[in-house]
Length: 388
Image 1 (cartoon, rainbow, N blue to C red):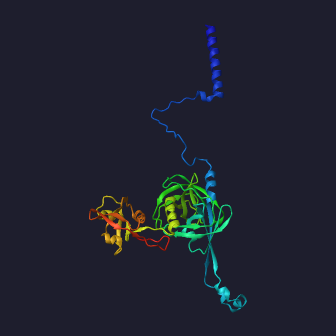
Image 2: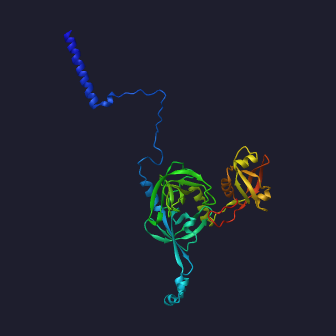
């Protein structure tokens, strides 16, 4: 009995010693947990396209930097003569010719090379009223540029320089961008030189900002500052998704709310300008306003979508078609009207000379009226509000 007890004690001691050694050097062997029966873990099979925490954007930046240029403009400004010029003694020494000497106002912005033969896309406000435009390429070379055409209603312009074999940017697929995607803003903020900033897409389809007539902005928190206007907003692969256009700021610097014109609009405008020097849009001669819940209730409308026709131009296409003030415009051809901004875009997309079907609600009835589309008159101001 004593031998058995001694054998048991020795075996226990050895087991405890082995357990101690395992716990000291291999603690993972002693860990076990029961998996809850109701817990299902979803594991991604591949990383999300574009970005992962800690990933470098260097390849995308290296791809787009050569295609982004700096735009320098000068405008001759004739202002009032300095009071000192009225002094007879001053005039005796410096002459009357100083009265009419023009002053130079300089401006800077950014642009994107869109073709190897020298076409450059930028903002209209960057080159507006410029007497001289200089383009500084990424390699430091400077060339004069001329304006091919501009579209104040989208704040876009196309420039041309005499050069070939330029590094043109790659266009992303339209509507490929999603909220939360990584983007890079490339430009020349404050004239310090070409700069790359990163952020995400905060929102899509921003309207009613009062920046342009036609608005469908990409909102991003990538730092966009004065001088970035006309520069490139690219995705994580370095493809163009937008043209940097404006910022929301109380101080003049970036506060994390920047706006870019989507590549779908930029490309459409650019191609029309290069082809004909201007942009042609449809027009039917109506004045509209957003349909508020109160107006929808007063018109006994179930759906609170559409636009209220507040006025009709006498003798215009809509007037000829029988559209009246007070009608609720709910559709243009197959496109549903959600508000006045969407209606403006739908009408503008029509081809002048074609016949469009405008569906209106009038006294609890739906009427489909054929309208002969006219050509939208040219607008003078960038953000001027006008009737579709």
